[in-house]
Length: 215
Image (cartoon, rainbow, N blue to C red):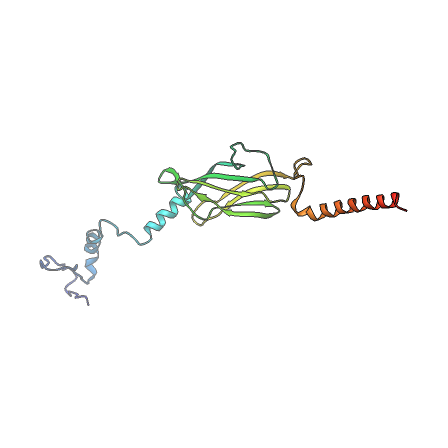
């Protein structure tokens, strides 16, 4: 409830009690000029901080690429134990894949840390999909074995996370089969066939001896 003071149109309040904590109210046609002059003194000198001020500031930083920007560098793949990056691999080779990811934050590039960055090894369909490990310094890495199907493959890192710019990395590489002199001389799985060939040859040799030297 607000207490209103009723008086003549030319009257205004002069003194306020010391314990008053609310501005006085008046009514009358002659109070408009005084109310206009007094309005500035009633307005706060400093605006209150709204609840979504921090949200607006963060969205503005994101829109102007002041935060949430990801950068990829040092994309590298090689055979396990070697440092040179080849143009092709052989089926069933062991290889390593690594890259560096940094985030632009507070005016500088800092290591990006996440546990959901994946790499795919694709030939039409993904043959491998592996979550990359990291060392908390922005370096992501993994190792796996090349599939036993030859063709043209791609290393694909397609990372889309809300609040961050997208990462799309594609590296093409060829996978070839074994050469004629790279196959194993004897295959373990083929031992039954080797035995059948040898037994056939032995039987033919014995049959020839019996046929030629016995009446």
